[in-house]
Image (cartoon, rainbow, N blue to C red):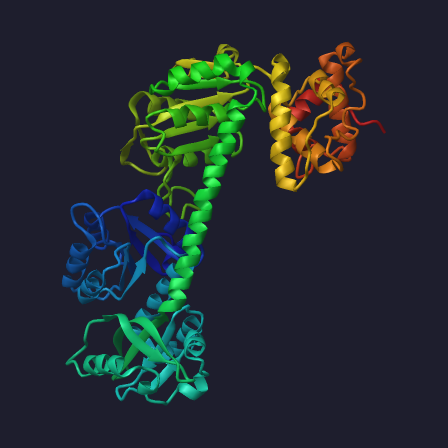
Length: 586
């Protein structure tokens, strides 16, 4: 552990599901916390022998040694029994929550995770741990943390008088702290809950925390009763026992759960809409892709590596999605990585993951794309941009299905189908020594070449109709016709940016259209149905690029730049400008 890590509370996350681990690492890692992970109970028990965490987030349902058994062993060990344990569980039965608290846990977090809840509960219990160690010198700092908590926190002395009333308690009970501190807690709790509290306070010694399930009620300052769920614990400070009641309004929680459920439903709806849109884009203009779609059908049911080649904007990712959906792996993840989108020094970490401390900034273990795609498909876009040293490591995974995380020694084994895409000729790159020939042969088991849009002009009309319908609905326009002359203009253009460029052109045209017939603006004023046959590819491409550059003030890259407008990568546009001798005149 680095010196910087020793200044931050260490959280041990014990979770066997990689997706949940990733969520918690992203949420908790940073300047505030140091995070360590264990993928099962045995690993957690081994870790605490060497590094002592400040708090443990412990999954209940794990193979072999489950969370309850792990907690029991931690609490039986004098060296670890005082580490606060928060269970993470999707279980809703009160008996399971009670069991965890009886074993010595201090709280629970319900799955699926709500980020604010995770942070609030971790913060609360880290500070409560410090309170037990040095309450007197930490009161001011603890108060600031408690004031930011989402749940109502009420501290009581041995007589049941309120000594602390945080802001959440002020909100829930509709009572200012100044009016609550010093009053007996029975003014805020229903009789049944008062009896539970009284029994707990009369326990000999230092009783374990208990879970107060649904069915109990509290009372607001205006006399309104409301149902609650809570946890009750105690601590020693300065020779005095304090009792801490952490509670939440059940109706507020249910309202939040309903909102989360609504958002999940919306997410499912949008995913379905996205799949439909992707399926529609794949099939629109299928006449020119008939051979390609037949190849997709043939290879989808196998595990063969596929190399999709074609110019930028031809829809290589859509072909990868179609292969994955039609395969036996369709219900598993399709994980994507654009090899040209990240610096070379980050690609290895993205592909294979890294261990904590593997390099500067690696504050926690991170699963790589291969791990995330286990059982599914990994789509490697722009594979021709991959550095030669990484090509060798990728080849090993393709050959053996094994790799190590960056900075790690443990060999990981995965079952991943590879689909790669490129706008280069990898055969030529391999012949020139810029791409490993052995990797090329591994990827090129089943090649699929996508033709550019200029070679399938018969697909332009259905694509235009599809994009017009799509963007008219998006922008609330009613467009029921594409004039033949304007369609002829579109068919006469050579589309250097392929379908992606056509999509962007139609979107802009829909925005500009005022009536019921599609308007093209002045983008194609130099291309007419009668003149289009006289235009060479270079002429059309040069005119279109010049137009985009003039409209963007000759800004090539960045937001609203010419590359974005044309649907091209900035490096691709710069290359074409050089080839076409396009320079800005003084």
